[in-house]
Image 1 (cartoon, rainbow, N blue to C red):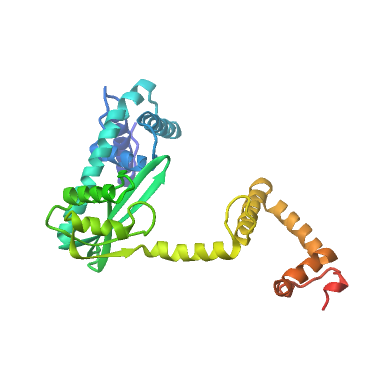
Image 2: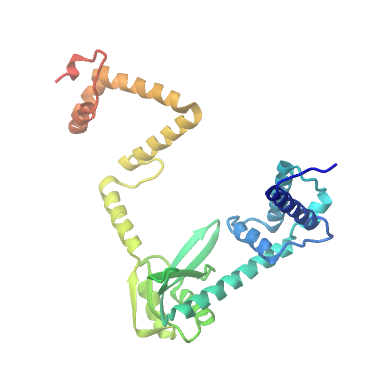
Length: 318
């Protein structure tokens, strides 16, 4: 029996068969045969699993494939799945390969941009019980369209201690290993508080030869903008946080309450509660008295935005 099919449909069937065969071959051997690029993609996504163990990563990869196989109806035994997935050692080795590839790529990019000077930004951090000393490089270069721009790369987040001497040693280690002697560190930016403040770190870097005498330093502008608002807010309204009664804390609690109501009861419950509150606002003289005493202008502006159809309190009609 002969069946005639269109050439385009035959091509589609052949491509589908090739995909299925590649999938069968990947999980039919005695060990993982996935390409270096395939395992690198897994390792890159696993960077979001900060603090996760290699054992957990191994199970997550196996579970993801098992779920996919179930969805497409592909039969694969547990033994074939375990042998076809990358091992813990392969995953850890791939992460090191990605780090090395990234460093080499950025070094080549700096060289292609012709950057002779770079700036660095440093900051201490503390996350998940671990100390970090973040070092970010910045240099002038060109984007894919040839436009001049600033580029950034973070070569290190290792812990380095909180003293100026320890932080300067960490910066020197990164600069000497990553940039060598061909690129000059001309500027440094950081915050002016905590460990290794920029006004203390910069002179130390000049002293140990990492930066020159005519190099520049600058306080972090982001810290400057947020700190001024934070200090003014504290002096005006007091400290913020749980147990504090300030306007900001009230807005935060109100936002959390609204989110919780939406999550638990949906928009219908929110509308019901909002209607109950509006009824009290319109018809409760006690509420009116408090509002007119403490915030008369917002009270009038609030009602100016509503058209009341139902009967309202005569006291509210001005």
